[in-house]
Length: 409
Image: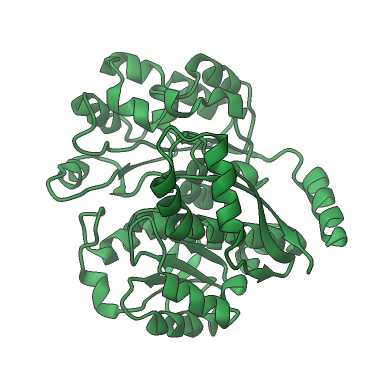
């Protein structure tokens, strides 16, 4: 373990001391902030993000102007409104919103490509939906790439129809969008084979997406500039829709015969399938996956699994010029984080909601940590996963931010 730690420190200090991709997250919730811990990108200081209060806009603009790089992946909602929550309630007019994009035009003219995403708001939360959509409608051709994921399209949401009227690419999702565009920036051209545990599920409209699952997947592949293939893939994306975890495992094993496998567990919303995880752990498959995601909506999980699998699976990660040890450590750490996110949804969040009321503080975090440390933890090549800390960045039970280590038994 000590050898791995020394090697990892050297890799970070020498090869990744100055990442050349700049990343401005949507907000500081774990799914959006996670890339800032991957040592692949350069992020704003965490202090510029203030949880539910949103980003300090003037300071964020000032920081970005001074950041050179080969490419910029940026949340328009963070830069214009201060974050996702603020994008729903901000009172500025369209002209002021457009003016705030000047920092991006400057960055692109000065340094290089800008890959941006702006969210079509969740219905009925946005108080000036027309302004948000009008801003998105002006972005065609302004930057290297712009897309508009829509947030939580439950029945009755106008988001799918609104997306169809925009002149830029759209798809379901939101909190995974930063990870998705990082894959587009860092590893375009990924050869992906998509496998469904139930082939008929590809035609079904899944909850929160508002469109058939296969359509969501195709739009996602386009977002990352991936090529869907049947033979010689770089990565197999297994879409697990639930019902029969044994079939899910067989689908994963089928994929592993061709390439590293990333699993998008969309059987439930904001929670993974416990039966599938038990099978993957018992068969010692989980620690070998390229990626796993079950923390969000179907599109959240699809995007996170594809992005992390594409960024850290050995073939594509090493092809991008990264050392093999760097790729392996990042893959394992991302899988460990994904397991803790699964455990939070399956055990931690329900337990906290039974025992505490929001806003949550240190006592809730400490007791939840002790409760979860009693759960079985997987063993990875770096050691057995051991959670060491837990915080609630927005003082609510929906998301948890973890600290952990790998223990040698």
